[in-house]
Length: 208
Image (tube, rainbow, N blue to C red; front, side, top):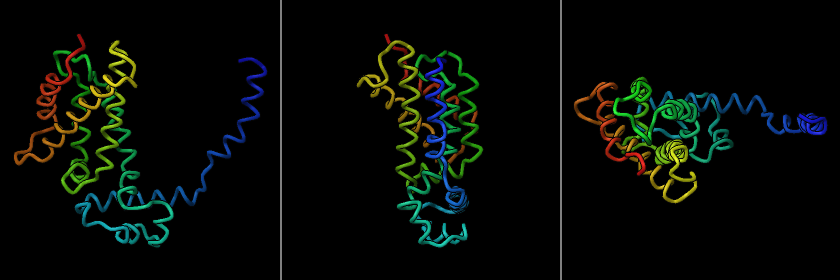
């Protein structure tokens, strides 16, 4: 790094750090709200949860909740961000475009991760779940697929064809997971992954 660049970075550092600094009270309050929302979601359907319930569980004034979140859906999405990051991180390690004949272990890990918190995923993806959560999950998965399509030489991630194929694969994956979660006869994560892998082979063939 040149001296001038280093000096600029050094001088900009404190200002950028100040901008990133968040009041610890805000961090604590949001942490309590997120934890309370996830606890309630594990106990009951989302449609039966209210902001008042979350505030009571978090021992926070109801008016304070609205200082941080516009509505329950926004709060639930924020509460699920860490879980989304873990799930998408696992999916990112899977080949989702050029599919090998044998199912990779990483793909099974995705289903095992969901199985580890299966009640919460049923709440979020069910008929009374969160549309914002589904949309956010689809977008994050599509970004991973688009990146893999670009790496395979199909095109840039922002090209229409790449974007459409990416959302097709992401939507198909969410559909497969949802079907598994709500089947009357429950399959194990390993069994569901095996069927899902065969399904993705039908919609995610390598580019010609």
